[in-house]
Image 1 (cartoon, one colour):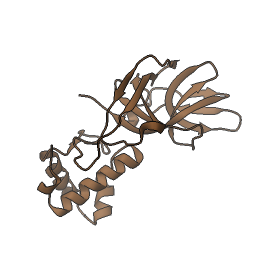
Image 2 (cartoon, rainbow, N blue to C red):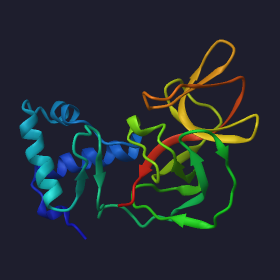
Image 3 (cartoon, rainbow, N blue to C red):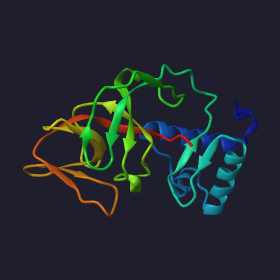
Image 4 (tube, one colour):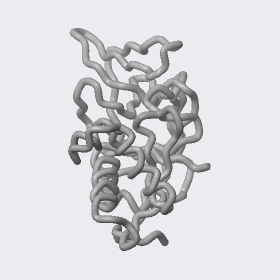
Length: 202
């Protein structure tokens, strides 16, 4: 297990800031956000700290993806009860969502799993939001959403999908995060919950 005691005080502060952002909104901060938070004027200065955290086994960064910082280890988190894996959800054409698996995903980054569940993504309609085919999305159970939130929904035909939610005058627009795909329009949808995290296995 990685040890935060091996970090400088600034590295520890940046690591905890990254962890808080990932846990609070489901994705990590940009280099610019880190620079602004810690008054580091040069992007290279931020990168030096990120490279140190990566070398010490605390984070992983996806190349060419500004927000793709993932926690590899979190020694400050208490053991998690896990999040129940209910099944699969489409990130392409909608598919029937069926509660067909009795598995549990165990995380250190999410606690209090009573109000959360996980779904496995199929399709590529959310790739510009860094959500890929095969990822697991963690959904906070709620029946309402604000415009611009990524939601898991079930429509009036019983089909489920993961899209960005927008309410228009007489219908709902479900926007993919893929420039090659068109939005889906529905008169009515049943919101299952709002995205709070993405987990990827390599």
